[in-house]
Image (cartoon, rainbow, N blue to C red; front, side, top):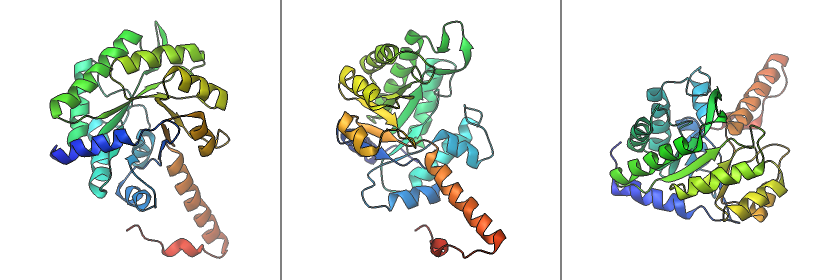
Length: 268
């Protein structure tokens, strides 16, 4: 998909949707059919892919085990299926060096994405712990921003930190988040922010430029909005919900129970 002025317009629209206290809520998708179903829901303003879900749909594990070409194919199919801004989960950036990460982001833009997630967690504990050393991560984020500038697309960079998910204190998530914003990130995705007080602390420290994951049992969407976040996503949760319904259908069919009335539903 060629990068056009429409790509830039969609990127600007995606950025505008990040409003602290009135967050962009993203139901993550993984293929053309799921993209069309979510896009058709009233109020849907943008879509996000979930790397876990794209990988699972193709028989692979998450964690950049799915080759980049296949991940980009999944992103391209989502972007081609809808007329909404699409932000892509690019995991750690699919690159050993900042230049490699920039090249991956360029390819994601060519696939139709106008935003991306880049995370700082490492697949294994390194000498500095479970997270990439901060200065290294900042170089990678700067390369993402530069890739967008070269392409003429003001892509929306959602910089993820796994500090809380790895059991580190909130102050470490804040330290990294501030540095990410200074390096050009638009929003800080704090994986593991699962209580209202923690979310509120992050929002205050990061000027509301906070993205969180909505989870069953965690703060509700209204609570997250009241806490002041700018973005809420659901990761692989939507695929789990869809496939749980599929499992129930299979169990009902095997047991001879009545089939659901939405069996006739077809993605538009």
